[in-house]
Length: 250
Image 1 (tube, rainbow, N blue to C red):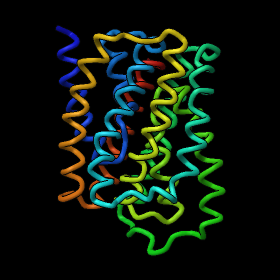
Image 2: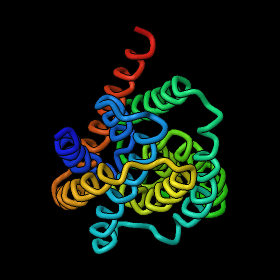
Image 3: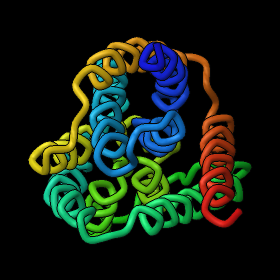
Image 4: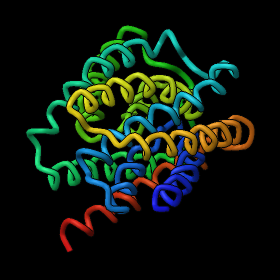
């Protein structure tokens, strides 16, 4: 019964996060943990798998709409793919409370930055290709490691990075969905290699994220404004970070 309830919650989350170009692992992981699943051995690997499927489902819609910068995102794809398994391996060395704290701090940074910039217009020009490639390569590897370590796809960091490099909000979100596919599945494989999985939970949850991801992506493509996307992104991240820190310190 609890698996059905969890899957229903995940469907709603997939709907929201697919609109933001995110897989939703920053909520999948804590939600699974709150429902009693072990943070390291179940919540993190399951969150990575669902993250990958959510963004893959959404990316199909964005690719058809030509909203994804495939060529420009290749440095992020390659370096995050390489970094994610390293982060997954490092989970054995980092205490659970430290992982949760890092998770929360990352969300506060991304959410706060997005909230402060939500009223600003998108940049009207991209930075030079060479500079973008350099920062994407460095940022992709670091974000990939964090993604594997914390059980996230890294989209909540990819989107601000791309926006800082000049990508419009919707294009950053759509391209992030494409990039996160690779870091999520790479990190997931790293965890499975460590023996971390719960197949019944994964199977039912996967169906939920496919449905939610498709609905959310189609909604973003046609009805969402850039300002709304930024504000939703920020509020969700800050709320979850507050919840996680509350459980650690109180």
